[in-house]
Image (cartoon, rainbow, N blue to C red):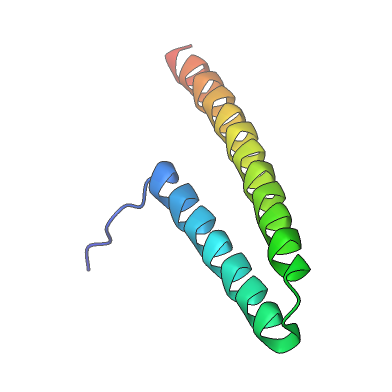
Length: 78
C-alpha cells in the first residue's frame, strides 16, 4: 500500500480552512439562534484572532522544523 505524502504547507492550509469554516459555522448558528447582529461582529473578531494565532503557530512550527532538520544534517555529515 502506497501512502501519499502530505506536505506541511498543505496540512497547515487544511487546518486553517477547517478552523475558518468551523468559526463561520458557529457564528452563523449563534446569529440564527439569537438574531443579534453583535454576534456577527464578535464572530468576525474571534475568527480573525484565531487565524492570526494559527498563522503564528505555523511560523513557529516551521522555524522549529527548519532548525531540527539543519541539526540533523550536521549530525549526519559529521
